[in-house]
Length: 207
Ligand SMILES: [Zn+2]
Ligand SMILES: [Zn+2]
Image (cartoon, rainbow, N blue to C red; front, side, top):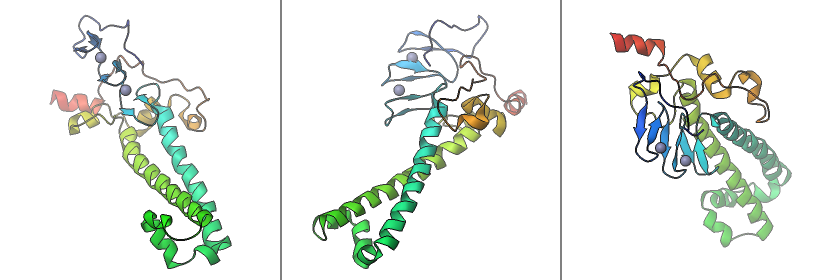
């Protein structure tokens, strides 16, 4: 993750000097003010895992949000069966909808346990909504071979080498099974220090 020891080739102009680390930093690396170090292929600093998402852990972050989505769908199905079918005589009414829309009502109406279930149900819906939001934001970025930090249209497509290759650069050589478990080893094709722009990008540059 950390840009150390490896330096630029003498004729390599793609490296820059990180003013914070006071050493050369490779392309696509970025200095994180919280981690206090340059991160290779930095995507963003994740407040949930408390670390930067970059070259080596991008795959695990994507797994984290994918399984957040899968887990909350799974929980919502079972919670919905319990609330609306098995305990339908308690929850299938307008007051429940009102409580879900305005959770403050949970403090003033109904029994403790029925309200507790409603609270967990609301959290479940929120977790699912958040999972969808995160996937909707991060999946297109991975598919186009970029990182969240890309701001311009030019930088967003700079390393786009086609969906298959872009997925491989995040999930590694064994990308077909790597998403199943973080314990499956899957080597990345890039070392994080040497990057070449996509061929279409090189073409536009030379035009
Ligand atoms: Zn730095
Ligand atoms: Zn960081």
